[in-house]
Image 1 (cartoon, rainbow, N blue to C red):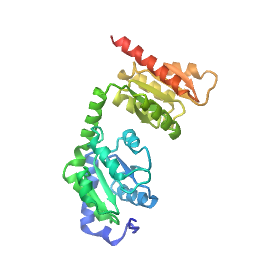
Image 2 (image 1 turned 90 degrees about the vertical axis):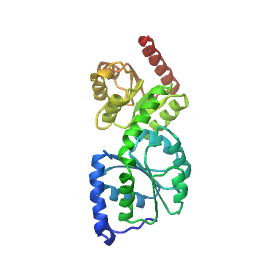
Image 3 (image 1 turned 60 degrees about the vertical axis):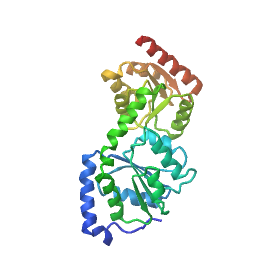
Image 4 (image 1 turned 30 degrees about the vertical axis):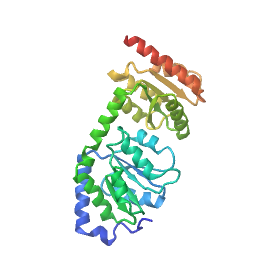
Length: 299
């Protein structure tokens, strides 16, 4: 277990810890450290690490564990992964090896935190840092500082995005942007499309969909209409307003089928309209038809 000390405990007040904290606050801004993925199954540990990260200005922290972890890494594209080794359903060692052997994820720094003293094995598999539980705030900050200090974290985002761009340019499979906020729908659709050779990028709200469409230029977009932060219709309009979004096929999907929905979706800029529940086989047929049309227009 992690130590459950109060944030104002004695070790947190040492000058060294305060100096490291100040340095991390500065470095995190300079390197655009925005998103950390915490792979951990203990709620207490998640709360403790989240508190430590929030104290240095990092608020976007995702916590997860169990199966489909690689899928979540691909979806979230984090700037740093904090990894526990003893996980349900999957070995942390296997996950670390998979992360560091994949050209898309190899550049993402991984800080291992475990009750086991296996630093040598973690290092051999490519971990960028290692801590043994229980930890203190000072030791945690020091581990992050060491990763920064050696330049691994500062350049990781550029390396990671370059690797992703390289993979997208060279992979034969089209990239599908799935804009959906329901986790069950995401998992079912992701797995179905992935099994048929497509690469899938997930946006969980309308604003992410607009951003990802501009950044990654997907071959096709599946847009749920009932989306948080920005509804699907407005997201479609903003994508179409972008010069590079004019030609991307967009299939609008809604669970609240009402009279006039199809017309509103098409007016906003969608190419097709589907109401839930969606038959996945029919969806793939529709996707293939649109991708073939796009390829034909390119010739």
